[in-house]
Every structure is written in structure tokens, then in C-alpha cells.
Amino acid sequence: MASGEMSEEQFFQFNNDWIREALLYLGDGGVFGTFIDWRGLQSVTAAAAEAGLSQLNLIVWSKTNAGMGSLYRSQHELLPLFKKGEAAYKNNISLGQKGRWRSNVWTYPGASSAGSDAQKGLKHHPTVKPVAMLEEAIKDLTDRGDIVLDPFLGSGSTLLAAERTGRICRGVEIDPLYIEVIIKRYEQLTGKAAVLEKTGETFAEVSKRRAAQP
Image 1 (cartoon, one colour):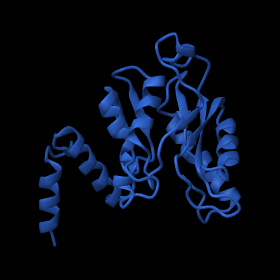
Image 2 (spheres, rainbow, N blue to C red):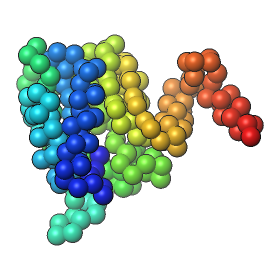
Image 3 (cartoon, helix red, strand yellow):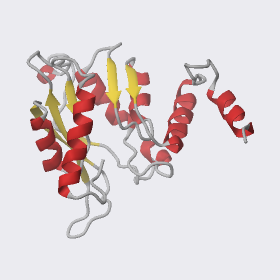
Image 4 (spheres, rainbow, N blue to C red):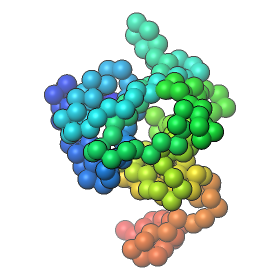
């Protein structure tokens, strides 16, 4: 997520609005986070604090190659993590006691890196996240069968990561072109046909029917 053409006030209000909507579906003790660049970190942190969240950590996604920049080229994204309520959050790391050794610096190739799994989706979406990185994050904080919510599903990396780790993804995406990318990535990964719940039609059937409509 990026501020784009919004003013600082508009970007804060945007963050405040979507965070509060997402929190309606997050249980007590649930962990919440969003990838952001250094310019938007203050806005996201302020909106999360206003929504009553407590901060758990700040993850740094260290990319293996640098992207665009002005004074310095950007080679990382930030992932502030917050907790809702008073209940304990799920911790599948416990400082290595459960066989997982993790730090708050995650080194994965960015979408522009040759050979990265995110590079395949770069032509369809500007901020594709590596599925492998999201898989590990999901395993850190959830159990098999748990629901993972992504209110900005984008290219569908969270859905793929949830599928690979036995979690259930609930995602929201407003752009029809990105929805098509998500569905095709899901079908390629699983070999299953995506189905429109309302009608029972597969994605291929819906596409064929809609293409025939005037």
C-alpha cells in the first residue's frame, strides 16, 4: 500500500477507515499487519494506535536487490505488527522452542529479482509479495485451519500462501483485472477450478457467459 497522490491527512483517514473495518473480523488477540514503505509508516502506526491496537514488532523485508529511490534506492519494505485486545496472540516461534528460528529481518527477493516467484506476477500487479515469505509469516502466527484475512488481496499471494499451509484465506479485491490474476494463480497452483458461490459456475464458465453478453 502506498500513499500515491493523497495528502498526509487523506492517507491517515484512508488507513484509519480500512483498519477499523478489518478489525471487525479480527478476534481478541489477533495479529494485524500491513506492508508499507518508510514514508507511510507513521500514518499506519498512528491509525493503528487510534484504533486501539498495541504494537508487537516491526518487521523489515530486506530485498536482495534495490528498487527505485531518490537519495537512496529502496531495498526494503516495512511490516508493522499489531495485536488486538488483551488475549495472548498465537506464537508458533517461542524463541526456537517449537523448532522455528525467526528474526524481525526477512530476506527474500523482491518482484524485480530474476528468478523470484513474485517476478511472474509483476506484469499484472506492481507490488507482488513472495509467496514463500507469506507462508512463513502465516505459520508463525496461525494454526492449520485458521482464517487469514487480506483486505487488499492484490495478486493473490496471501491466498496461495494460505492454500499451501492449510489455512483459509478470506480476501477482498476491488479491481476486476486483479481478481482474474488471483483466480488464475489459484487454479494453476491447485489444479482446481475456482467456483462462483452464488451460481456454482466455474471461473471459465462465468468468463464464457459474460463474454457472450452484449
